[in-house]
Length: 191
Figure 1 (tube, rainbow, N blue to C red):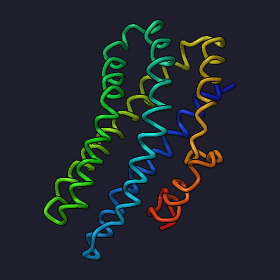
Figure 2 (cartoon, rainbow, N blue to C red; figure 1 turned 180 degrees about the vertical axis):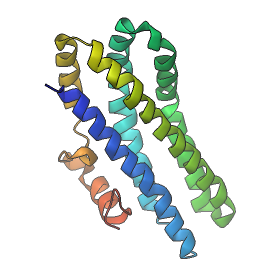
Figure 3 (tube, helix red, strand yellow; figure 1 turned 90 degrees about the vertical axis):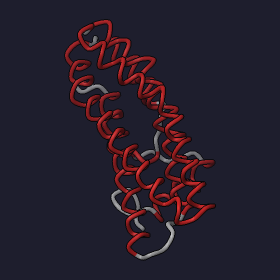
């Protein structure tokens, strides 16, 4: 039987990857139309990344999943160290994007290129990070974790309830997800 937490991790990765792929599409569309992007949608997308993957998903990987894998697969220590370092820099990376977005919004066209390049670097790094987790860490976890490990992980990851991974958002987050889903381009939104 496949552990619930494994499904949740992969679903959350897919939701985040869709969000990340939608962001440059939104920026490219604005560029093609020779206008500024809808900054409120871009802000909403960055806020989502900070609120859900950064604060919920990464925390559980770093505090629960990675230590279990590290204990049973010490040969993955360098990979896990690198992934933990990425997690540790995640909040700062989002803040830098938010700062560059604010500069673009306030200062105009002269700041577009810096923001778009930073977004591209961020997305490439994030997608690579998730690929390493999916190709190295999760298969090791499946092969070496115990049923008791999975029970603990399943309970922890089930609490995440990421709305972009199919859960109903809490009332406080409903406007955020409505904005993203109605305004961002596919693959995450309808805009």
